[in-house]
Length: 319
Ligand code: NDP
View 1: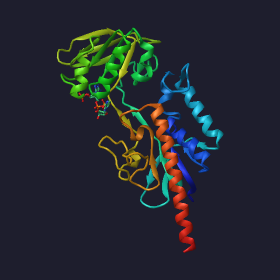
View 2: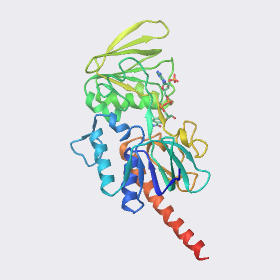
View 3: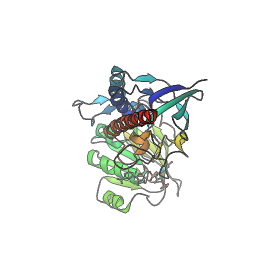
View 4: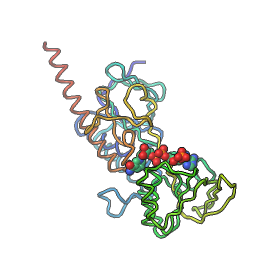
């Protein structure tokens, strides 16, 4: 099958991908955007988004992503269902395979494949997702003001989420599965200064209780085997994220956890014409607004790259 040749391919449909699409369309790059397995990205599994500037009354995550998509379509982005399953960045143009069969050759590729929160996989977690269960305190913590919540994890994210929630909630239980935390010393010290955080050491979650909404959490001490029930309306899983970057391994420089490394102050990767934005390259901020910002950067970098390339090609032809 002959490959489809395009100027600009965007992989992923969160705030980074759609923002890149808006800018790339307006710049006349005729981008094609593949939405991936979760059109709209992580925001489609949150409830209310209250911290994205420009929405004074807040907006639901899914609705916000519909708006992003509409805006990208308005400027002519070719938005398609499908998943990039393989890439070949060894030559030029860049080759990308969609759904294991369709081949695309793109002069510029913008990667906005995001990251996925890791989940515990316990009973009740999926059923109560968005109804008490969350993987983002900054997104959802506000809805649990004055209530009792549980945070699971022992890294910097868990420490940060617990500290953030302690300002809003009446009580925060932090469940740590070992007898020590992996979080930095300074973050751990901070936890000690917050009187409404109670750390439960050697404690694992067994089950989440509640039909329509979370009501309580069954936990077990893995040293003594003793089980107990914590009454809580919020359950925040903070055991890390995994960037969705597996198909780019071997081509792009990444850190040890798979986040794509971009050249400082830009969205450029180590491969010319391949740009990365959003959570696929950010394990620190991970906010919709920062993802959108880097999506804009990627489109501007791609445009600059394509213009320079056109000039080079024209010069070669006249030489
Ligand atoms: P980490 O991988 O650092 O930590 C994950 C934590 O979750 C570990 O403590 C792990 O426990 C625990 N965990 C994993 N699986 C389970 C499970 N099934 N049940 C219970 N606990 C579990 O992820 P983070 O997201 O915390 O951090 C990722 C990176 O981002 C780190 O480099 C971190 O430093 C950085 N970061 C920096 C911040 C900052 O500087 N402000 C803020 C947030 C993150 P165990 O220790 O037992 O393996």
